[in-house]
Length: 229
Length: 67
Image (cartoon, rainbow over all chains, first blue to last red; front, side, top):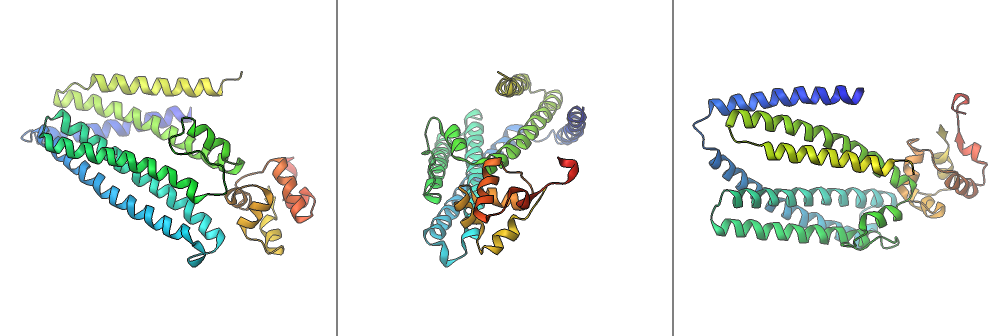
């Protein structure tokens, strides 16, 4: 019941946001949407490049400290430091990867110059390489633990198996909260897409169906996983 | 549930990482238990009891209504 109420609340919030965005879009119909999207693509590409630089800096700092942490802090502080910094690195990598993917998508769809598309493509490939390289750092940070190699096909299962009960408790809490947030965010996204379609006349029906199917598949997968055998 | 883990760890002059190694768990698990955010399994409780040479009920103290 609480979940339904929360979903309804987010739906109303989404509707208000959608209406506000639409109202602005109507008043600014002098703007060409393609031009706005182009600059969003360029901004995403720049953001990706900035996040790549941030990631490399974080990666190098983490490797320097882990080389001889005793120079900087005690054992407990180091364990907290490497754990949090590795998490920060993952966040930076995700930002750069998703931003680059958005940039590539926009620049291809808008049929901009080949050089721009190629540049975005190279940035995207670099972010993929960086994400794989960063995952591999975990084995260097925790040399005494039997952690899976980056790129292992059963990476998630092996990582979970290598975690102890306290770590699994933290992972479960984090995943459950992010799962709920994702459901609400996707639902809000559907509402925004409905308003966007109505106001701009650009049909987003495919995206709405796709998001709906993803939400159903995700719920089905969860229900199948927790079903009593 | 209340725990005396932090107090006992200080008594033995162990940091969280050292205690985690002795108990064969991660430092995060020790931290969670100390913050009373997590009730450990019987196996870990038993290991901790052995390390501190104390009965489990002297390390983890439950309220009557919890039992």
